Image (cartoon, rainbow, N blue to C red; front, side, top):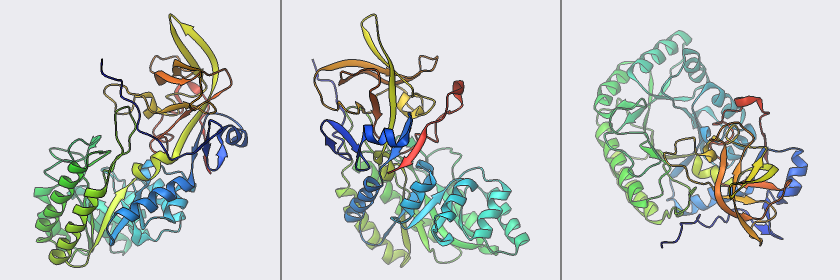
Length: 410
């Protein structure tokens, strides 16, 4: 019989006396400091370490932007802003947090397929770059800029005719609500040239959450080739090319960590080629999940322990209303377990096979299904790793009226 796949080794947090350490503190101590469960905790040193490791492997000359939608907690954004070269936002709310971080408007871009007129006006007034998602949005931006007496900074988000293969979320190829179809971009660029808008460049984002270097290399190479073709119709010299991100993190059993060595080697070749073909332009890699997911944990407390027809259940005060992704109800077709631990019994014996469930009256409220865990007791803390991205903000906090979780940066 084949062995069951296991989670990739997770080394972002140390373990002392069999207890997980987050932000330099034992998790039980951190829980006392927070004052209640459930809570999300984000480790600032883990984020800084990830950015530092990424800068070591990526070629010189690549700008690194943080896609705030992964985790827009203001304290996290302030911290990330001190580490990266720019921020990418997806709403007026995120835009305000980005500006409050002290990041200059020239280093902030705004994407999203449905921008309100007041969001366009706010971005234009601030001097932020708009990643245009449609021809209609271009015309609205030009009208608003004219009414304000401000020249809008414009980039074109392209829906390419290829996709990032094996990605968790495909953002390109075929019909998509995101961006302007590549074949229509030349006429959009011509229209920008006829207008008073300031053309900044292209945003070509093909997918996310990819753990295969060969797929990333193929997509990045195709992205540069597409940019060269479209640059022929650009109304002026491109200033920036955002090639998206797509770097994945291991969440589920059987997944391996992404090795960026070959991706970096290919990217170095593309940069050299790009300089000869497009001149000295800024190449941006935009990452969210990859920068913060592994730096976060979700912590809840066991309220009850019961056995039902041979299955042991650990019933906690957390669940899908706080962490929809870990419950398997945020994009998973077949539910798979996030890495889950007992905070102070990380590798302890005895072990038990138990399912971790929340307090909600639905069978969907599962944080861990039949997992090998340290034998737990009522009052122990359950930790869900890989929880720094798309946890708090992507979850239905109002479901069944339970209080929302706390967030802390440590």
